[in-house]
Image (cartoon, rainbow, N blue to C red; front, side):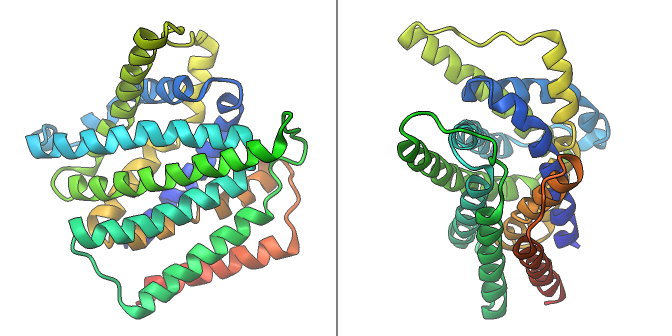
Length: 296
């Protein structure tokens, strides 16, 4: 069942990614991530009210786990936004998802004592392979012109995406630990709001150290747009936490990486972007690999 939860979460994240890209590309990375987190902290309040009263206040240990997850999430989001602003969305997403999956499996051995059977490792490797192939086949940026020094920009985008993957791996492991000790709805709300608050803290530090503008102002119109466009996360993050709570964190993270396939399908449906034959083949192979994971 946890694989179904992860697949549904991947669909939600793909919906958000397609809609939020417009904002990420015209707003400084840390500001954009902070705006999103703080706005979700407001629109996500129903998650708390949907949680049984006796489970709304997690333990002090959970707060510590969530602090680590939120710090990694805030910095990771900033790097990811930088990556998609400089390079290909598809390649950035594939890099982040593949590295975060490998990292979650590796770190999970230590903190979660989770081990994968040989068949599971092979199928996870297949998922990572097809995610990378889909990412390279994507053409999200066909009308995007790189700034001068395009090779440097692409290299920097890859560097940012790699950092994001490592940070997300740490985040997923501590989210798994927290979700197994508290209600996933509460963990989801703490994550989204916590990422916004951590971003706000980093912006304050930047302002005090460099004298730069504290935080980019956001218009009421953009607040509403970000609230609507990021709303799928309010379903995606709880579903992701349920998958981390109920199953192996490494497998759940691998299944979450399928959001890159749903990105392609949504871009085809919403933006009328053409799907190549190879993309369709890779997407089918990816889904078959996930289906086989589900049957093990």
